[in-house]
Length: 303
Image 1: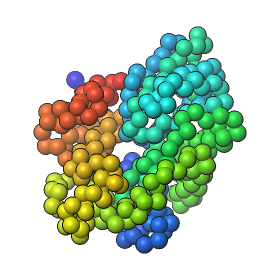
Image 2: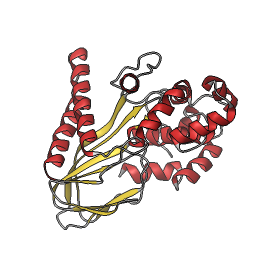
Image 3: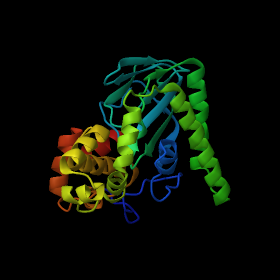
């Protein structure tokens, strides 16, 4: 029987931890727009030891992963990057939604420091819609990344004696980590156009990000966009790479993945929380999108 959570499942439209405060409205200046819409969420991070043999199995996670082996080697298989051999001192950066698996093939096992996180901006778009991960990170860059990661983990897992001071420390740590990422991640050629197009869709993207669990129709989004139907669909696809209803389903499935990994809520509770009244229908959609059932996804990724 599936374990049920001890407390009521909160609205999954809220990220578990958001340290950036969104301003109301969107400024025409792209830098101001990015500042106003930037959100950082920390999900989990710590140092662990995996004995030999160990594998995560192939998986696709709803958040990005930054990981660095501290003792012994490991191999990460990453779609689009191939096999990445990482040794102590290296690091690997895996964007949310990228299929991957990590294997421990050293008799001594692997001790690693890792973190799950997201940066979102422009109404909920993932940072890696704008920049590309280098995959493997080495040398001084990897050392700087580990130091920035340790700061994030330390401030997000510490007891908050002074909430204001803790908020400031978290913001500073997240900004330092973001600065590190932007130093090592090449900007995608379409970044400037995507930012401009996102500004034109600001109302729609913000609504989808905040209210994806609510009933929503394509015409509702069209009215928010204040664009012609054809222009709206062309613009939306250029920003997100998918149509509005497909993007809505993607956001719901992504929120469900996060809930499966960060709460003890039942599959039925999660289905309702992300906008599906029928848990069986939700399970079919989830399985088609992720490649396994919600229960199997939770079991695989809790190990």
